[in-house]
Length: 398
Picture 1: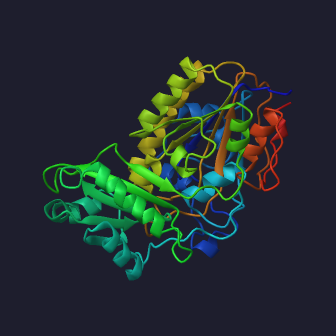
Picture 2: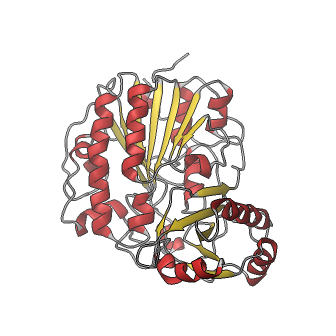
């Protein structure tokens, strides 16, 4: 067996794309570049670890320069799937090609028929029903929800129906029940929403409302066998940190940990590296780049988040072993300098670090995010299923 690496840490900097794809204009995203434009707005990024790993080879990120990086390989990945959302990107990393985009309801909210059925089956009045950030909608509708025990329904650029309710008025168990009903309704072909998310909140007024860690996702299951399934079936670890477990509806997961922030996610990842001597993958999603800064078009906050991540990446690099691999990537773009609030159709970076590398360099662009999963399978001498796409990155397995 090959098994060059025992532990592979796949870290998704959610939405940190690095340049518009060739077909970006078809998605209304020509000229976008999350990483570069963020760095420009910030007057440069202080990211010494990503710089040392060769990020500058990929694009003109302000604050980076060309360096030799023998312990890291870098490349860009294109998305083969038809979309620019969370589920499509993550599923493709694990070998799933999505040809029909999962439906979104960003422009007009959900159909009246869906809302009516949800109200009737839950027994709650539905308020909201438009695209919004999770914090802004609490300011707008939180006091009304708390007062009348209604349900705040809203969506975003992803295929998602989110339901927010105050924990003192609508107990978490009741909110979860309502979300289960929404999940059942949204399995209909005319809706087929990717994820239903419970968003409980607390606080006394619009000024103090805040979401709690009791978020709960109900996602569609992947449309085929994933790399995670194959690893799990072969008794290898699939440790998930952040919303990975939810994105895959628990399929192929052996262990999962929720997070409350990027920093918390990285702390849990570092602890895994320090204390958990497993064979398999640790799959991590850091959502705040996307949720807190990308959708809110806040490039300064986005830049600070990248700098915070870079510090913790350095800590992770200091504790991994010689036969470990770190893969840092993204699932789509969300250029905080662009118009609107939607994701952007971008290539994503792939930065791969191992102490065992001696000849790291820039590699040619890859055709699919799925090359990540294909590389994982080849490392563990496992064969992909017939439905999977992707080709292994052979240069890092020599």
